[in-house]
Image (tube, rainbow, N blue to C red):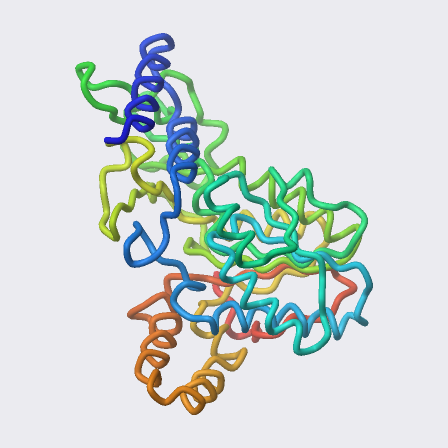
Length: 358
C-alpha cells in the first residue's frame, strides 16, 4: 500500500473509531477521491479500460451523434460540449474530430477534479475549460453533455434488510484490523420502495443521491436552454435489489473494503431513476438501449470497414475492437445508452422504439 493510501486507511479508521461506523457511501466517496487523485488508472497497464480507449470509433460516433442532433435542431449558436469525468480526454478528442468535419466547433468543458487526469485531458483537447463540479457548468447556453462511465463511480447508499427492518449498511473495523460492512442502527424502511420492503434478510437496496442530484440539475439546464445528454454506462433497466458494489484492480475483481484508495469502486447505474428524473423536467427520454445495438444503428460496421480499407495492416485489430464494443461477449449488452433531450429538439438517432429496454 502506498503512503497516501495508508494515510487514507488510517484516517478512515480514526473516523470509525470516533463515530463507531461510516456509511458505505462515505467510504466509497473517500476511496474513489484518493484513487483518482493518484494518477492514470486506464489502459492495459492500469486497472480497467473504457470504450474510448478500445477504439477511436466510439468517440467518433458520439461526435457524429451530437453533430446530427445539433444540426437538426437548427444549429443553435453558443452550444457547449460538456463531459463529466473525461478520463484521458480521448473520447472528447475523437468526438471533436468528427464535429470539425461539419464545421461544428462548440466550446469544450470538462468536469474533472483529478489534477493528474486534467493534465492528460489538456493534452488531448488543448482549449478545454476545466470545472470542479456540475454547478460550474454554464447556465445560458444549449448543452451537449456526455457521461461515459461517470455515474457508476458515484457513491451509493446501501440499505440492508434485517429481522428488525431495513438499516443502512455501514463500514466498521473488524477486530480493529480490517474494514467490513455490516447493518447499522438507523431505521431506513421509509426510503425503500414499497415493492421491496418485504424482501428477505439480508437483501440489499441501493440508492445514489449524488447521481439523482446531478441528473436533476443537468436536466433542468437542458429544459431551460436546450440541448441533449448522452449516458453510456453499465446498470439495470428495471428496479431491483442486490449489492452491485465492486472493486477492480489490474483488470481483476477485488474486495471493495480492502486497501481503500487502491481500487476503482463502482456500482451499477439505476437507469430507471435517471430517466424518471429527466421526465420530471419534461424532457424527452430515449432508451436505454444496449450499447451494441446503438453503435450499429450509428454505423460502426461501415466505419470499421472504412478504417480497415485505409489501414489494411490493422484490419484484424479494428474488427476485434468493434466486436469488443458491440458484441454481447464484450461490452455490447452489459453497457447501456440513455439519452435525454429538450422536448423541442428532434428525436435523437440510434433509439428505435422496439429497442428500448425496461
